[in-house]
Image (cartoon, rainbow, N blue to C red; front, side, top):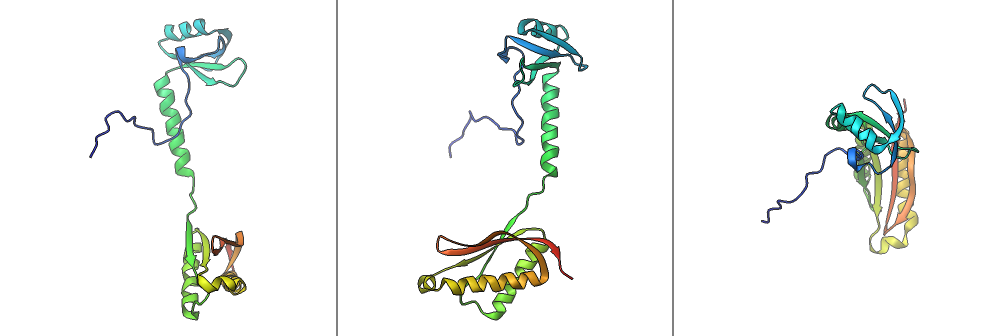
Length: 187
């Protein structure tokens, strides 16, 4: 097994890159001090010198502004705060999972009910449900039968839940598919 010694470790959380000190390219910048007091526009050299006198860094916080806005602050602490915010934001995001239920044209009544129960469990958990019906061989000549099966499945689910159809019945790549999400429960 090959050992990779020169790989850089990437941060788990995406934070945008901020230019600091001599990496700032603009000749004139708008400067804020550590207390968020506006010091006005000044040449980049003077702003960096001012930051070094306070033993801090000059960080470009708004590069798209004209002239760019820079703050005098501790760059390490600033980066840590941004990563902390990104971590908190990621924890608050709810990722909806997609679950797949497969049917067939020749599915039996009991198996059909099992698939409905399975889809119900997924919807109760808050997942999206993708219902697939792959077509094999001569079944491809009877697409109307497959659509009827999917419609029966949809009617059975609508009897239990209020559903939002995210993707209507669609034939693609030799299979029918449909995506549903639960909005509420019927009494």
